Image (tube, rainbow, N blue to C red):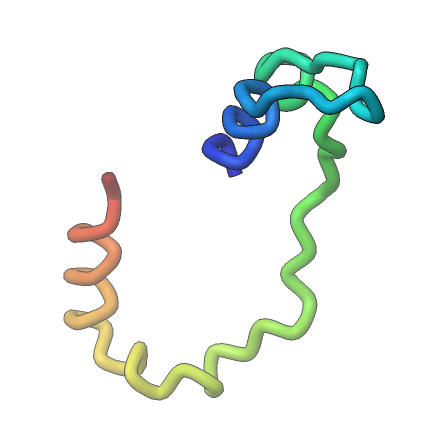
Length: 63
């Protein structure tokens, strides 16, 4: 997403696109909404039934 915004800022503006938007302004203009968790059902993910595997994957992806 940031790459797309950066490209939009760095791309040459055509006469129809005379307004320039900085990356920070573009990010600031993005809408912020509450997270929606409706529809998640743990039983749809049987591979997570192994708690050791789940714990290991979450630890690995913790960043």
